[in-house]
Image 1 (spheres, rainbow, N blue to C red):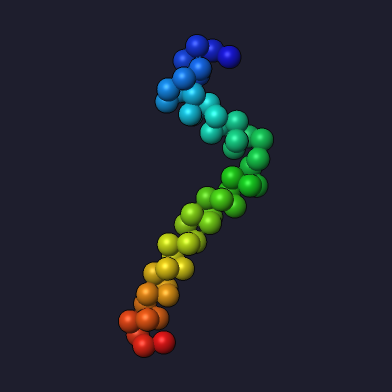
Image 2 (image 1 turned 135 degrees about the vertical axis):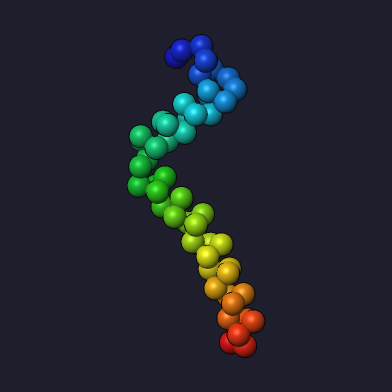
Length: 52
């Protein structure tokens, strides 16, 4: 492993690239979940304000 990828921000970037390359579907499902949960909360809050 190259020296810049042993510790620090380079290691995090290298780790993330490994996760994306090895678990592509799981990565995108998790990313979609991160986007969907706040959207769900906003929809619920809007329904609460609307009276539903």
